Amino acid sequence: MKTGEEKYREVIKALKNSAEDPLRVTEIEEAIIRSVSEPGKSGSEKQGVLDFIFGWIWIGWVRTSLITASFCLVIFFVWQQNNILNKIEKLQSEIRQNDRMITYNPSLSLERKLLLNRISEDESLTEKITIDRSDLLRMIDSLEIVQNRYRNIMELIGNDPALKKAVEQKLGKSNKQGLNL
Image (tube, rainbow, N blue to C red; front, top):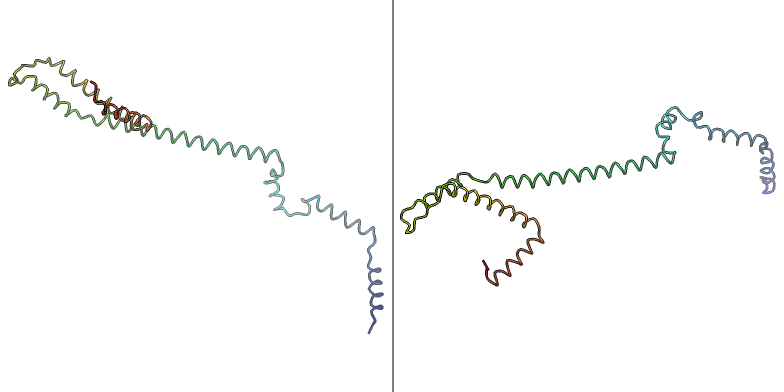
């Protein structure tokens, strides 16, 4: 068996013999640097296509401008959706208002006209009431207009909580004091 010092000397000798030539080391370094700096030659064709397609991500101003453009598109989309929803809400309120106008029933108006006509021609009354037919029709039409305006006012009051509260307070005060007509 070899002693520890003999083993040590053999290892040192082997290391000295295996030492590379300094000229050879610089050639290896240069080859490595060349292969790293030229990715097209050492890389595959697939890597070249990916670099061609996604190479813009390494250009700062292009990346920043594309991110800004995407944020602008998102903001435009949100603004557009908000406008669409506002228009739908406006359309719904117009439909509700039109539904109220459609609920006008001409047969009820005709019944009112006939009732008032009968009252005006009723002979059993102590005092005879004479109403011209055109005046009677104008009065009934005015009544319809007043009813439509009343519905519109009630809708406005119902849609505005502050106005509703103010009207309720005003009516509460007038009920306590009594109606002054």
